[in-house]
Image 1 (tube, rainbow, N blue to C red):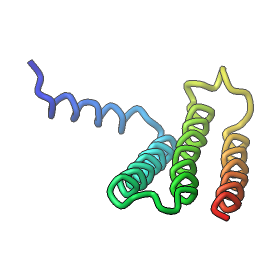
Image 2: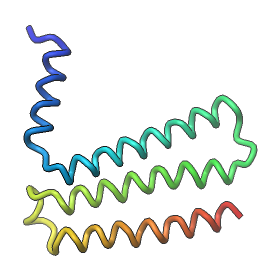
Image 3: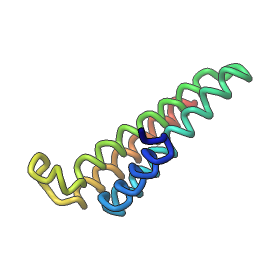
Length: 111
């Protein structure tokens, strides 16, 4: 029977060998978005949510950034080229424009 360390090591090796570096960068950004959202939620639970709109804006921004990154990852993955038309540069441009609009909305929501 395989140990958990052996299984996780195999997963890490397969991920590093089979995933393009561009997608690994997007995955790292997605992990960062989850960590930021978790930190904000933990702070809200421990310290309270006095400026509630600030918590909603920050947490919503972390969730939206994760969703935009997931969309970017799907559209730039070479295995999904048949499902999504257009070059990866167009997907990245869409990602950037969505982030700009998101941050304008967040700034307006903060007041």
